[in-house]
Length: 190
Image 1: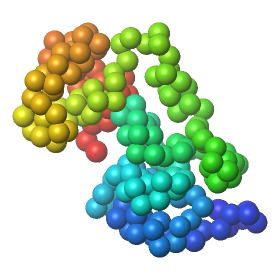
Image 2: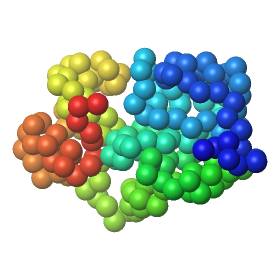
Image 3: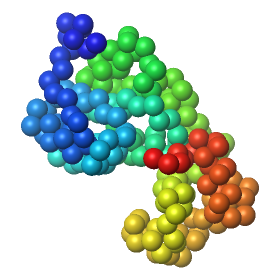
């Protein structure tokens, strides 16, 4: 599909997150399209590694995943754009061209989500760290394991959980995960 555009050229295709990191280093493409679900290392980790090597690298996420946690991780890793796979051809072409110019490229639904996070009138919105903690809870990790995984104290994990419970209006870990998954804040099973 990209080959139909005179100004776009595919210079490589990766089969895993680790392969994407290697190809980005070797080929130094103007723009990298990255999925989030990849073998070996996930897309957000791959983006982070690509940007560690080349801070000017421009990466657009192209995925089916639209939870707050997925979006936040990708943007925090350094993605310049985030499109869902149901985006039209022209939207994809335009996003690649915009990213090549150093401009953000967000699908409308993602842009709406990102703007809602930025608004000060959302006191019940979970922070990026709270989403990370809740994602770890959803994976069945204990407070001690979460603390080690995120390099924070166990007391800090407990504080984050209390804030999460209050913001989601729940009383326990299971209810927090259930409510967050139903609201699209985290994704289960992936």
